[in-house]
Length: 331
Image 1 (cartoon, helix red, strand yellow):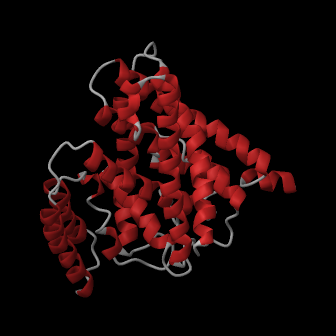
Image 2 (tube, one colour; image 1 turned 60 degrees about the vertical axis):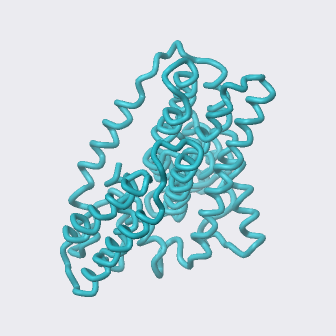
């Protein structure tokens, strides 16, 4: 998972660079607004259903439907929009911001360890200072950045009480890169020799294997354990995500954030639907919210059923005529 977050960060670094799909930063700000909306709306819907249905024991799980699974939502968006559409890096940034905010929620509302912000900042500063030194010295191998800076960053996250899966995210922007972007998990026609591209090629296959095994191991839930928690989580995800994302983008537009030129509000609705796949991150949130028992099993089933966001997003794309369906309708 650390490697996947690193590859996602690599995609964001290139997308927000000059001539990238999310440049200037005002366009990236729209995705961050969308992440906030995509967390607030599902949480409100979840708590509303819990209150109306009279299940106070489920209140602790309000953060479960705020999650977005980066890997599967990305694959769905790429299938709908194509590899080079601005919707793909927009969704990636939305999902990364969503998960980063989710880790803050976990730390504050579901603490496992004591948060040590001073330790975190001190050790991370040393790690990033070393990465900056490597770049200034024009080191063209990615291993010093990852092995030294990444290890220290992992220690900072771990000892600071934060999830170490994000350890390589602050390191990736320091890797020298070329002015091109083949895309996440994509092979360029002319393989690059810059450190950032070589890093992607080195970890791409192991990361794909780990993602598969992670979902396989964490998805084991008895199908019989379907209950109120299942449907509340599922509804909050598939309804709250598109509503929250679309509303937040409109609100952000009112304060000056703009969408990428090639991205429309119809695209944003479909992106919000795709972000409704909670899966691995929602499973993680459920485990943090509830102990072993029927409440955990019910909410985990809701996280698994969030894959229904895929046909919903596809249907929305067909109805709104965006992505691959815009091309087919035009022909």
